[in-house]
Length: 261
Image (cartoon, rainbow, N blue to C red; front, side, top):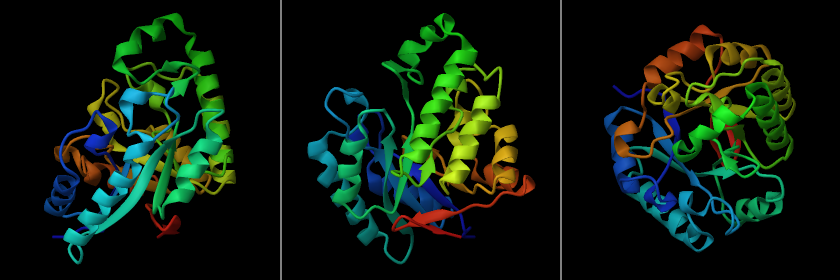
């Protein structure tokens, strides 16, 4: 039986750390009974930024062409949309704005993966957590999230509480609430990202507590598996939809960068 669920956070091999052809992700979505999916691969960035973990600028047209081909192949069976997971990193906003103007995107996630030069969600650099004050880390991180929300570049904020990935939870909470205020003020959604259930923290992003705070602020959610292989498409979406519904939240998608639902 088909469900009205969309997976709006998916990657492709062009990012350098995912496997499976785009059409395999689409087939997995169809097999899972999803209504549609939106590819949101890691966007190109300046050459000095995070190069091994994203497509290059000269691959962007290839990415668009590959997604368009999947749209054609699955037309009438699956709603396939074209998006990006774009990074917010101070100083790169103009570069990202140029990418967003270059194609007709359906949905753009704004994510923070770096605090300064530290890629804090990369398992290679997890030891750095031991050298950091967690209060200060989360304060710095959520200040970047506020900047992302206010940048005007994005439709949603990706994996809101990502620094908890390896189990280093926020000891405070005030900075997260300020970030949610900024998200609400900018009229953005939140990526409800089920990949957290596959990580050491064993909790989706955002946490149930932050889901409740988002609902208080009228912030909707966009379901995403953050799949880096076809078998992860739609991962635990029934659990996610139930958690959001129980909190009084609502699910939306984006098409043509306009909120649906």
